[in-house]
Length: 499
Ligand SMILES: [Ca+2]
Ligand SMILES: [Ca+2]
Ligand SMILES: [Ca+2]
Picture 1 (cartoon, rainbow, N blue to C red):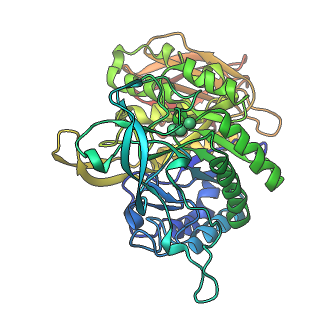
Picture 2 (picture 1 turned 180 degrees about the vertical axis):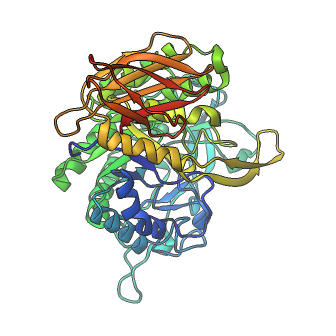
């Protein structure tokens, strides 16, 4: 990253229309996104999922099919074709935006054929407890990729990789055709669950589908080979690793090192370790020796709690037990994502009134690498079934206007020393003093109560500041010592930059 303050966008949400247009949209929007201050985009999984053209991408079927082969009922993915993906990356690069690929190593779904194997059923709620005898099972574990053949009649080898997945590449699966009603996780012959995974449910190696065995040499070899192929094919700049708490942690470091050496580039990496327990995140960071950043899930949770708590929430605690506080250089800070949005698996919404406050807290401070969620930037409207089985219609507000102001302030004024004024339960603020290349300074103040004010030092005597959010029309001028009484309106945030 350059000395410019980086900002990532998660350039999708769960309910983007499945019209195959997202990659084209990236190419079309790249110039504007760069102009607004975005420096990187995390794009959704680009390979074919079991749901074909409808799959969000996490139901991985074939890592080598980036929307190129007629598999699972569609050539393109939900987001477009392989050529469009490559064009999108190129367009982003032309405007100085980096692209992070979403990488799912944990599981495979949508096998082409069944196989008979031997396995022991385990309790889904306690993966250390067998609930039956070692037995014959019939499982969907054979992936033949029939659509990935070369051009007939001469080239009948599969393109890019000849490997077919079999039961011996996996640790476990949760469906046995011989006993369809049983709720169990079948640990396959000779396998054990990965170590160094999250310890929820006893051992959280197994999440869904066919769980990859990260100790199996062919599995490791194939995933490393895929990394090489991906670098040759797409030129992405980094990775967002999915579901890292369900995979042996060392593997990410091993894979990353291999891929970096192959590409001869410093590739960025952030993992999705969705846990509110800082110790678990810490453990992952230790095992991967600080090579992989993590999303700050505990900070998201604090935002969620603060947004529900109203003025009962003590804003001085907003960074308590967060990754950005403990490991600021390894924290990717976020407000919302495709799992926390309404009707999704980890639904824990940050209420709309608090979103501008939360975004100010990630975009305008020194610590953390902030990530803006597509649906917060552009808004969203969709329908889906909730956990109660009823259908809901959801509208998510568009925060583009205020986020563009924050992006401007981040790009031009969010530099230099940071003075914190976290001294009141309802109103907190901080200043940035600027640096040689970015002079002027900035003051941020926000409240979950009624109108707030705070005396803060910005280091510039007799200088006039305006509220870039437009919430407050009057300007503020500092005294001869570079201090001023900055203010904000009730339940909102104001960002003061030089007039
Ligand atoms: Ca796993
Ligand atoms: Ca495994
Ligand atoms: Ca294993």
